Length: 288
Image 1 (cartoon, helix red, strand yellow):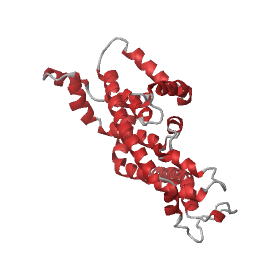
Image 2 (image 1 turned 180 degrees about the vertical axis):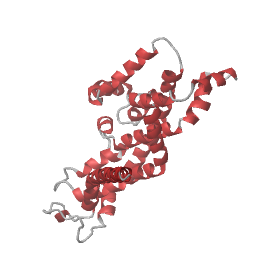
Image 3 (image 1 turned 30 degrees about the vertical axis):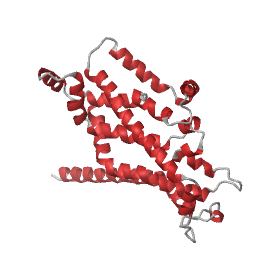
Image 4 (image 1 turned 60 degrees about the horizontal axis):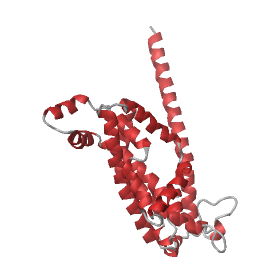
């Protein structure tokens, strides 16, 4: 008679212990991930003499709030911010539009060689950008696009990134094919099915793709470094490099202050889009 309550108590205790261990691991991981950000924020508020103090001082005294206006006024960051914003917005739109069209063709249409082409597309994911950067540079140089934003924007309109095609294809395949058939019976074309049925039902996946690509593009360094040589065309990521190798060394406190400022757009994007981001990850993980 006492066995069932004892087993129930044991199961409850083991469940609580398991939950405690899970939360402990998650909190520890969150702290480890947050340390670099905390160090960046701390360094951005230090004087040059405090940057390399050992042991490190996490709360500087005095707090050098003046690092922020000094960092932003030392270089034309307003211009660079606008450059980055234009590149990110236009290329993100191009990536989501083109990759969703290609994903629609792979997921909803039937045509000869479809699976083989999809395997070839996935194979391109194993090629790092460093492998193709030289022929890509030669191509854009011959087109006269060097020192313009075109090499950073135009490829996005041709579904250049296979990962987003794969991500959207997997999501599109979870939508019942019967909806396509019903729309075609009403006289809808393939493009109308894509535009009026697939896209409205795929907002979470589209938001995930847009958010991930925008974050990548905002932080991209190699592309702007290769194609942009004039300082007025720099992006934020490339402009931050100007703090390195100054006449008297690297201004780490100013660099970190500028870093904090230019993290804010990404933080705001994630804050306002986290509902779609989490929903897209959950749905893709369960149904994809």
